[in-house]
Image 1 (cartoon, rainbow, N blue to C red):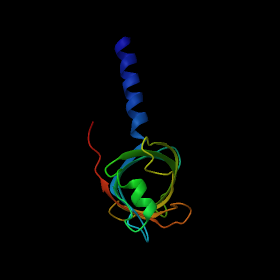
Image 2: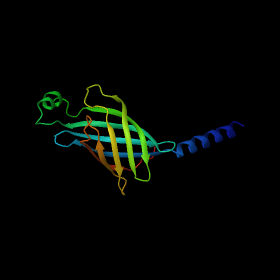
Image 3: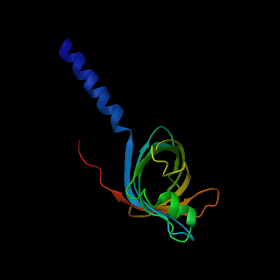
Image 4: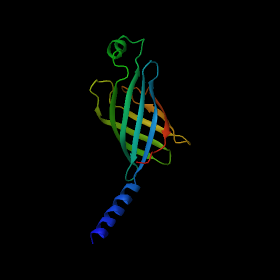
Length: 150
């Protein structure tokens, strides 16, 4: 009886996990008209309906040398990292993600929560705009990464 119960639980856990699709990306964020650069890894998990959730792992790469605030605030923060949690939707007809940051782990205050409109190309890579201080001047480009077996 215990073997049957264990088998049923194992099959249930496998089939529950099989429905969730995970997308991984590695890329760069910039802001038009500035020198800011962040690298990131993005993990998005597709849930019920068109819902997605996940997180960005950000790494600060370059401040804007032409902005005195940027130089003074960020010059000692090169290489620091932060995590931004996002949730939103994926439209399979247009292959577009619309995700919004809702929480962050950012002890050095290097990021702000943002909103993202990201279009997937035929190779599974993404590119698009971010709201970036309500301007939609943020730009993302990222390559799709293969999932690795656990």
